[in-house]
Length: 409
Image 1 (cartoon, rainbow, N blue to C red):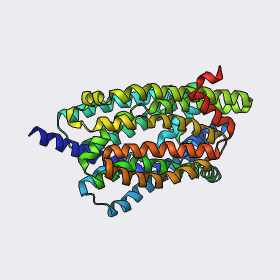
Image 2: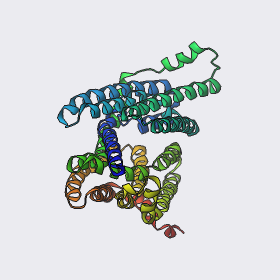
Image 3: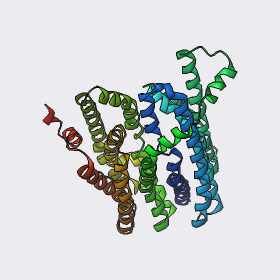
Image 4: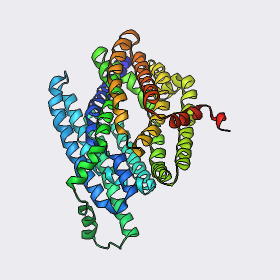
């Protein structure tokens, strides 16, 4: 009886992870690759704030609607049942509220990420309480999907609150509710600005889609080639492996304005700040991945129980993708500051075909551990190729010195 319960739970967890991964394949379109481009432009000229934020907001909203339409078409080509499709559309609806993440861009450009942290921490605490209550009451998967949608609503509300509060204290006092709401309506859509932003961001749109494909495709292929239970085992390990990814993202986002300003001052300052960021990312990643390699089975058993005995081997491998992610975040800031987004598109497009081939071959041979190897090999092989082919010697040397930090002394 207990084994049947665990198998059922793994299957449900696998179905839920599959739905999230399936949505993830399309959700990259909703961002339109605008985030770092808008931040860059806000740092250059804050006087265009309402125009840049407003244009980005409406573009993201249109992107979210496009995602829902795309999913409505795509589900017809899958073997999903109606219950799984319900999960997909509820989770996908969260992209509508994510349009308000434009406020996050503004705070990052002003190096005010503390407000973003406040909102995320509050949302996480509230969400965790709700999820615990749902678990205790043995709620259905649909209820957990609604929690994801609710999370996005809370985040959007928090962003709006702190944006208006910050505006109230930093500009002319805004004393009335109507005036507060008017601040949101002051966001302007400008056609020429939209075309300019999309001109710079289109490589990032496709790069986001490509990266999402070969970070989510593994779970979809595991379901098609193995089972939902296998997806549950794999997803359990990936959740732990990716749990800390927000840290390098927050660090890099907070320091991005300083890197852009450093470029304005001199090449020496610019490269010094990039070097320091590389150093931090590389050694922070190694400090996390190295002990987890040897503790993976213990961590899985502690958090999930003995029934997830296959997840430990996946975690041991997948945890090292964090090193490549951290390096890629810094490299991503470099291509934005240099306005060379097209470089990443070439490499990551190749990565799709490499990842599909590796997943197909390695999942057949090694199961879910093969999928972890496919992800790791794809990440590092494509990154090395891009660095060797496109990175100038000076920025490549920054990364090299990060691994051999003694060479700088």
